[in-house]
Length: 179
Length: 173
Image (cartoon, rainbow over all chains, first blue to last red; front, top):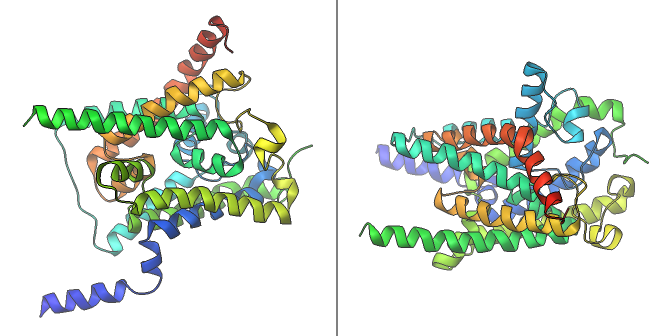
């Protein structure tokens, strides 16, 4: 009985918009077009161009503006975040949006790891950010920059693919060693 | 000439946090529902020939191009650099450490790209996926996001300066 109810509830939630939201194809298209819309709305506040959505750079802007305000430092941030009353809040939006969505669809689960894994993830995030900023953006801004006509971004994606292939090799080798 | 969009500068500087927060809320919801992940897309394709996530990333590039093209036809002043290759040539869109040569930018893109792909695969996701998984209650992803925040400060305070000095010393910047 309860199972049937849950199933009915799930089917109800699977209808309409949610079908689109669950398809990466439509989500990708939407992110690309929305990024362009954000640029046409906000570019007067300052550049750079093709900056509508980027997890690495937008995180950098929020963190560095906060650090600059608190510690009086002059860490580099994008012009748009420097000029505006508050920096770009995209990543905070993503956190809240994904949290509400996960709660609503009952997919919120606290997942813990070992202390060692926490340290690995912390270091991973740290170096990920540094190398993403070398490249001038996370894979998303790189994608937007390709759409904008940036050849260096295209080279960046080819490098990402090379890194992914190396990562798969390493992961496979590690898995084999562990049996 | 400063780029001009639909909102005037006075309005835009107030609208920036609001508009980007709304954009983030929407992308967070979509990202949570779809499991959208760029690096995951490449990984799934090379390991299992699954194209679901890969097409999502390709759609982002296409969607961006369509969006930029359509909006630049409506308001050209907001897209001064579009289409970048035709207008500005090989120099990348600004955002990376500034005032380097094309060669230096390419070297940075290659080093950065390989490292980003490698770390992304080994830790199970690109930054958007990590942020979404954090919101879903994954504490390891939370550590990743905290690491990203620390990395941002380290990069701006030290690494970018060192990198530029090193590239200049090597004669390629």
